[in-house]
Image (tube, rainbow, N blue to C red; front, side, top):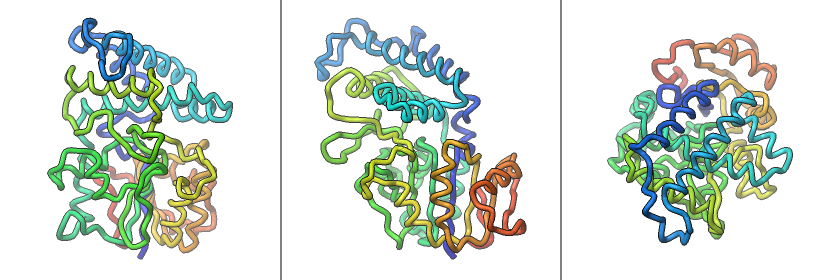
Length: 338
């Protein structure tokens, strides 16, 4: 039986803020970077970037971008809503600024917080007898751009770098080298991930190559340096965070097409912490209406009944008894059909 998971922000709630918590948490990160403990030195530069700015001044540019993001988030329903507006208005520079600054914010949040432990038990339940033996009938679609999947899996691989764990998990993004394979487990990140990409080829690198359990000035300096490489230089690169509705007409880069192909035969859909926001509605419809063999949908969240109602605006052909709510969120749902 083919099973598809659909993850939203609520799936990482024990580690990262959900939409309405982001402004307050972003303000805390701004205050943290302004504190004496985390001020980068005025007397040093990022020499390899050939910038006529001290590390402190570069850090201040990041803080200004965070403050800009905070101001905009206060005037929009969410950061994603603001991003969609910029995309529609073709304000490319501001959209790039949003992606870069929001990525760094999420990176810092994940340095300061342990991984949501539900991912750990999810892997323990799915894996059979080795770290590569995932069930081949399971696919994961995620609207999240965090690294909770990869960070949690590092406990299984004993490898603390992002790229290795992403490879083990067969993570697919629109810019990655990996492509979907119908015969293996995979995680498809619809909105990309908080990394950096080279314009030439599809090489990716991280703001900090290894997962960290706490933020230090050394870690922060590396993150700020990589941020500056895209924000303040002519480096031919761009953010790996790329919203699903940014589509370029190239099949190999169309993550929505990949998601449709990988889940077309899904019989069970498990929705975890995803509220089907209106600005994602077109993409959700395209993917979920393509699941021609869908028999049952589980909704797991404290407000699971609300998720079920929103789902009906996307697909209304399934009988009510096939739409099952689960309010217990201590662990990610593992249905009897698995």
